[in-house]
Image (cartoon, rainbow over the protein chains, first blue to last red):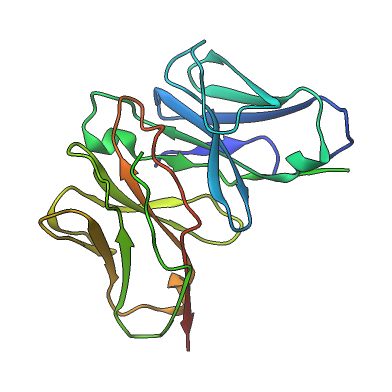
Length: 117
Length: 111
């Protein structure tokens, strides 16, 4: 089974702090994604990466950055945390393109609930 | 991007068949239709994917009419453990990043 792990289930940070959320997948997937999930809004894509050191903005990249130095690891960085970044953060990975339609199937981690006070 | 519309919530009783319909009027020719399930405090989990007609697996069936402007997820004989949020996604591109998760349908299965 594909396993996607996230560094913390719960995190509490203060406004202005720099926050790192780590995600690791163990199935040699090419694509990795970061979403945030808020009540009534579903999941919104922040950033995704299709290869090491490659990144693309999603729908809501403002206030976030990402890093992918190794294929299995994708980090989400909040440069200066703000209260409106309090949310559930979900990491996902998928096989990648040229793998047929199932290459788009995303495997999600358990999520990190971040509270910024 | 193909936008999807699905009911916000549904109630059912144990043992019943549940059908959740999703509208996607501007689906593109190369788009696939994918459904995910999410339990509280967990990430979404893939259920089923299809392009046209009918797809069935051990968990659910997916019915897609010829015009592909809608699709119906069918869950046979639901149990309490099927209580979850179900997301309908439409898209296909090089990286899969355009699969948009809307608010989903919150299914409550009652005893």
